Length: 400
Image (tube, rainbow, N blue to C red; front, side, top):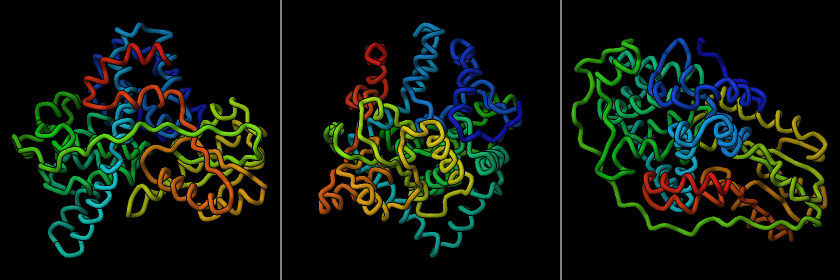
């Protein structure tokens, strides 16, 4: 089917899941690497924008797939679900990597104001106006739809870094500005992996033959791509930090709930029992980038929040959308003793929660970040590479 906009509702996410489910086994294993272009993406689930905001959760997807296929039959797809989990856990243990990326992006953006050649090449790449046809098509598809096939993301990043020789941080930022599933962990670490910074000394190199094969012959870059480029060099990984624990809430205390775009399914909090008076959503999507976030991404997230309000209805109490600097006054207006929020992984929402935690203490309020059991189970195992994490998948599924 042709590429169509993804609807910003849980119902749409579940529809994608149910349509894909019959193909999550051997079909996915055989066809997942094919980017079909204008036909759309029938061989992959297109669930990532919904999982990113957790309007459909990883646990739900795994339960649905394993209700139909054995672990061995659906192994490839299940591993893809856990890749996103692994990236989040890895970054939670090394949050400084996100800060280093942000600083690198700002430094690269500063170069654009003084290096006219770099700026011209960067603008051409972002507009899809390079000499490489396939790259241009992917740039335009991303901007127009907010989505890109995973294999195309890898090719695109490799061409950006090694053929166009643009700073990898600017490419990661381009994705963050336009991807509906733009995520600090998955996006940043995937770009680092292509560059050779994540698995240090080992980069991913796009080749003309691979692109030709997995685009059904639509593209043949020929000799336009860099051949055997050296991986980028960077500092060693920082030491691992502590595993996030999350907080315990007081179920009897007068409470308000703060929602953000890392988790728009607060049922796991409501099910614990809480004296909830009101709920607010603060949209920090624009803080994913130092530039301007794509309007379609902003709208998609805002509409997902509206869908969340509609799904949970009266359980959320009085609902509103507010700015971060309004949160504490809003909480006080409801005589709240605690602000409960889904645990925010490394990124703009975690920055907000840290800021509010400090400020709320001055007003005698607690900010309680509730960690999902799924994350508490999986993240501690993201200590090394994915292949060591992968060995834990059967046990993790038992725990889930």
